Image 1: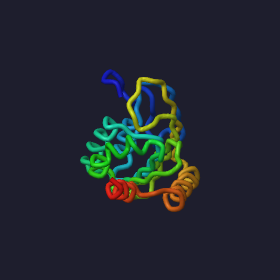
Image 2 (image 1 turned 60 degrees about the horizontal axis):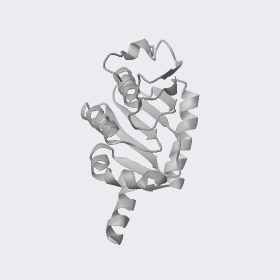
Image 3 (image 1 turned 90 degrees about the horizontal axis):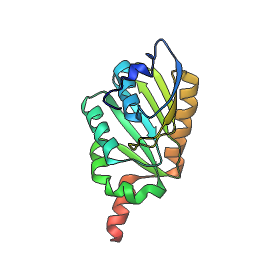
Image 4 (image 1 turned 90 degrees about the vertical axis):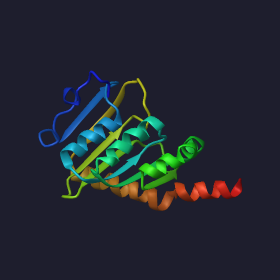
Length: 173
């Protein structure tokens, strides 16, 4: 988020607005995750993206350090493997479970320990850009359930754990 931007200018509290959307270059996915965790408390996170950047990982590091994330599951695309492997040591420190799949989706799912759920479908990769990005945010449990089932299927049946892939590459080299 730009320093001169307040997220409250773009989004209303989840309790008062269960479905909302934005289109702006002022917000980043990490801002939205931080904002959701502020409202839900300790939560489990599932996030999918084509790729991830070091800048985004730094934001996740501080979000994780705040102890508001119980478990983090990340799915990235196989085609971004070279970039992902360069960041592997940092990813491994920040995110417990990282998977690679044929994936172009950009989904953020957050479920609190009390069972509250938030789904975010966004256009933004986990990178920093100055482009307009869009997102739809919902607290609808039916939407969350459908997306979570599909993300779980992607992880379970169509992905490779990043640690396994990294070990294979080290062995091959």
